[in-house]
Image 1: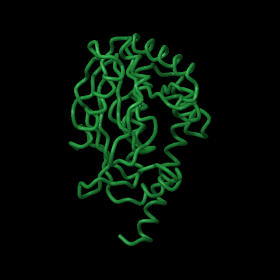
Image 2 (image 1 turned 90 degrees about the horizontal axis):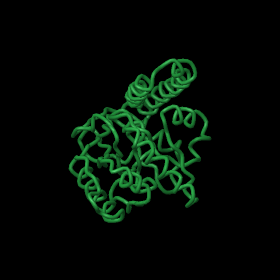
Image 3 (image 1 turned 45 degrees about the vertical axis):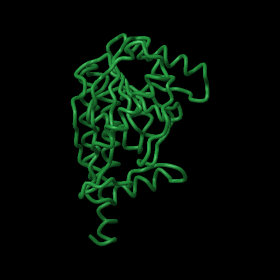
Amino acid sequence: MSRIGRALRAARRLGALLWHLLHGLWLVGWRFPRWSAEQQQAQVQAWSIALLACAGIRLQVQGQPALQGPLLLVANHISWLDIPVLHAARYCRFISKSDVQNWPLVGTLATAGGTLYIERSSRRDALRMVHDMQAALAQGQVLAVFPEGTTGDGRQMLPFHANLLQAAIGADAPVQPVGLRFVDAQGATSFAPSYIGDETLLGSIWRTLCADALVAQVHFGAPERAQGRERRAFSDALHARVDALRQSL
């Protein structure tokens, strides 16, 4: 396809994406209050699947996501797309930086999707979040974190921050490692959705929409418990599991 053809296709995808975001706001404002928690979760997953389709991205899942909570998902972090990709594969409540709550459109949708917000620069707020996560796990909920703390380049994973894993240890809840990867039509790793360094969000979105036949791959590993391991050792083991899962895709 020519450069002009790709730009036109990207513009169509962008229009579909914006319309889908507005439809999501309508659902949140008018339908969510009438639905049960289970109906809301199913709608978040269905909406996320449709969002990927609007962007021209196919979802491919390997492994078996746990059917019920309590559960903490830990995954590598590549792109702004990681959250809808994981939501499409399995509904979960994400732990996200507090700034997201105030983002236009996105903040409203993230809150409706059950996101828990943390002020990353505050140690006190980190302790509060561990307490809130532990309470949510005790209620049988499914949570998700990106322990790298920021997006990586998709080539090598960053070290994990172990703090939030304390919630799973305290609740004796299983943790399921998840590997994420984006590939092109030939199966090679695609960096089109990357969002690192000096890249702008709009630039990353446009590059993604211009790409051909992207596939979002999600590989679920076997859930495991800390089983007496201290937080740092458990974190290191999970880092190795996630790294192996993403490389096996």
